[in-house]
Amino acid sequence: MDILIVEDDTFIAELYERELSSQNLSSKIAKDGEVAQKMLSEEKPRLVLLDIMLPKASGIDVLKFMKNDNNLKNIPVIVLSNLGQDDIVTQAMELGANSYMIKSNFVPQEVVKEVKNFLK
Amino acid sequence: MVTTVSSQRIASYAREVEKYTYIIIAYGLILITLLAGLGFRFENQIALYIVSAAAALYTFLYHHFVYIRKPTPTAAIIDAVAYTSFIFVLNQITGGLDSLLFFLYFLPIISTRLNLGPNVPIFITFLSLFFVLIEAVLASHIKLGPEGLNFGFNNAQTLNFGSKILALTIFGIYTRSLAVEFSFEWELRKELEKVNQELKETQKAKDEFLFIATHALRSPVVALRGGLSLLAKGTLGKVAPSQKHFIDEISEAGERLSSLVDDLVNVTTLEHPTFALKKETFKIKVLVEEVLKDFNAFFKEKKVELTANLTEHTVLADRKMIINVIYNLIDNAIKFTPSGGKVLVETSEEDGKLIVSVGDTGVGVAESDTPKLFRKFGKAGNVLTSENQSGIGLGLYACKLIMEKHGERIWAESILGGGSKFSFSLEMA
Image (cartoon, rainbow over all chains, first blue to last red; front, side, top):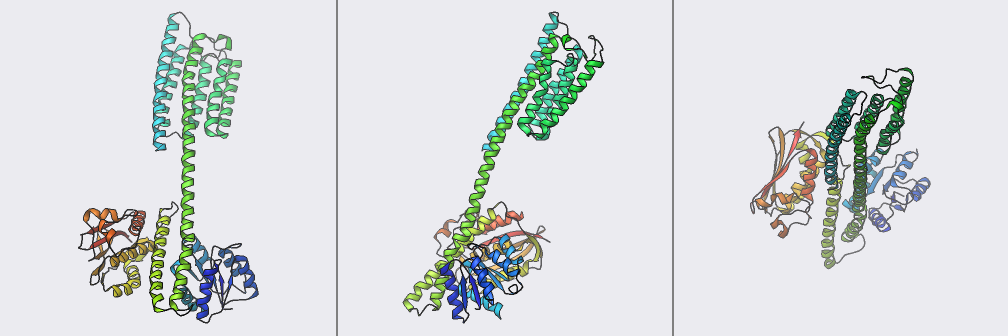
C-alpha cells in the first residue's frame, strides 16, 4: 500500500483512490480514526492522507498516535480537512503534519500532485 | 437597548435617593428642634448634629460620586464599613449599647450579604462584633456622666427619646438607601445575566454557523468539484464532446460555490470575537509579487495588462490577512476590467503610512455608490447588472474588517465607466 486515505466520506475517499490509482499509486481507505490506527499498526504506508473530523478518533488523535510510534513517525502526513481555523491548522502542523490542505480548495488531481511531491 | 434603559433607571433611582436623603434629614432636624422647643432634653446635642450632618454628607458624597458613577463591590464594602462605624459612633452618642439601636448593625451585614456574596458580610460581622465589644467594655468601665459631650457612655436607661428619634431618622435614610440599592443591584444583576445569556447564545450560534460553513458546506463542494474533475479528465471513462461542455460549466459553478463558501467562512471568522491578528514585519513588494504570480495566467487569459510599481518598504501587519485583501482587490480588478484594459498595482508613502493601491480601467461605479461597496452584501448599482461578477458582496466587506482590525483605512475612488482605484494604508516597520 502506497497511501492510506483516512476519510469518513466514502464518495470523497473513492475520488482520491481513483485519482491515485490513475497515477499508479495503490491506496486503502480507513473510514474512522480507530480503523486508521489499526491499519497503520498492521501495514506501513508510504504516505497518509488524513481528514480531521472523523468518527471514533479524530485526525489529531491519529497524528498523535503516529508520532508516538517510532515505526510510523517518519511517514509523511498530508492533512486534508475542511476545517481551516488557525488553531487547528497550527495544532496539526505542530504535531508533525507535513502539509495542510483545505479539502474544498483542491480537486483530487491537485491533492495527488502534492502526494507525489512527498513521495519523490 | 437593555443596558441604556437600566442605566437610566439607576440614575433616576439615585436621584430619588438623594432627594429623600435631604428631605428626611431636613425633617429630622426640624423635628429635633421642635422637640427641643417643647422641652425635651438631648444629651450630646452638638455631637448628634455633627454625626447627623456627617452621615448626610457621606450619603450625598457616596451616592453622588461613587455609587452613581461606578457601583463597584469595593464601593459597597467601603459603604458598609463606613455605616458600621457610624452606628458605633451613634450608639456611643445616644447612650451606649442599646437593644433598639443594636439591630442597626445588621443592616450593613444584610446589605453586603445580598449584594456581595458570603465573604464580605463575614468581615462586616466581625467588624460589628469588634465595635460591640468595644462598646461593652466602654459601657462597663467608663462613666463620664450624662452631661456634655461625653460620648454618652451611659447605659440603656439613660437613652432619651430625642436621641432615639435622631438615630432612627438617620438610619431611616440608610434603610431607604439600602432598599433602593438592593433594587439597583438585583435589577442590574438580572439584566446583566440576561445580556450575558444572550451573548453566550449569539456566540454559540456563530460558532455553530462557523462549523456548518466550514465543514457541512465544504463537504458537498469537495464531492462536487472532485467528482467533476475526474469526469472531465476522463479518469472515470471517456466523455463525449457534448457531455464535456456541460461538465466544464458545472465545474465552473462548483468553483464559484467553493469561493462563496470561502467568503462566508472568512467573514464569519473575522467577525468572531476571538479572532486576533498575528502581526509580523514583511516586505510589501515580496508579498504583492507572490499574489500577482497566482494571477499571471488570469491576466494573460483575459488580455488585461498588468503594471506593478512596488516600493521596498517593510510593513507591520498580519501577513495572511493582507494577502487576502490584495487577493480580493486584484481579483475584483480582473473581474471588472474588460479585455484590453489595464490594472496598476502600486505602493507609495503618504503621511507616514504605506499606501497600497490597485487601480483598473474597468466598469467603475458612481462616486455616490463607493461607500456601498464595503458594506456586508453591498454592491454598487451597475455592478448588480454586470455580467462578470459572481460574488455576494462579502469580499470587500472582509477587506474592510481586516483593515479595521489593523486600525487602518481602506477606500475606493471610482468613476462610472472610467475605472476604479482601491487603496489601503499600512503601518511601516
